[in-house]
Length: 291
Picture 1 (cartoon, rainbow, N blue to C red):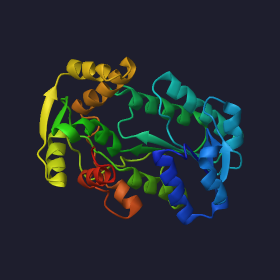
Picture 2 (picture 1 turned 180 degrees about the horizontal axis):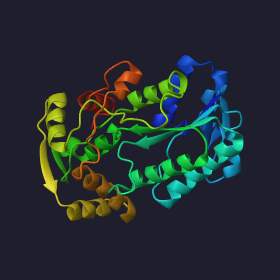
Picture 3 (picture 1 turned 30 degrees about the vertical axis):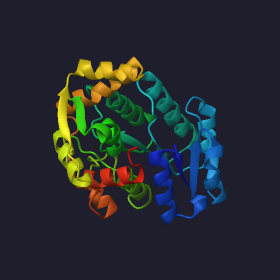
């Protein structure tokens, strides 16, 4: 059995669907904080159990009988994130799981300027110390994050953000298919961190402005604002200070070149070229037109 955590989220839900293309439903399980949100999976024969990262005993129960667990990283930061991951790794050991596959990030490093990348590095340390076989998916930076940064520009035509650097923006669908391939057909191929699993190009927001213009037929400009100005804008729109500082870390890390790597492994795993950012942008904006 393969257990997927976070199976009602953007990545986890896609991985489950890809697994069900390869495996009978009784060989797939999910660990979710609210089983009611996974009722549709239960109806299809998937084992649904409550697994709360703040309740270690629930995770042991959710992981029972698993040959592999896909540990989808938590949407938290700092010690709260690492503590939840520690609970999951410990639970996997207690449940006798055969392997943990973890959704890390291409920039994972203890000295990263971006807090989540430091959290990923600490989690990889936990996996290394667990004694279990493990694979860390060094996923490209989610393209969905770039689209959130562009939300205001959809209305104004001006991409007003801090100075940045090239980022290998990568789509959830491609990453989900790669994760499913590693869990089902590539088990054991990757020990420890994978090579970067990235989209086809690393782009800064100057390049993104040109891509957005081609995709929409509109004109987009790129205005560089200072980090301090951007932080004040975030706070004025109601963002908590810790979130504002975390978002600024994206630009700091991008300027340092932490997200520039582009590699062939994602295409090898999926059997196709990853979706370029222009395609992802056009699809997302077509599905949710600006008011």
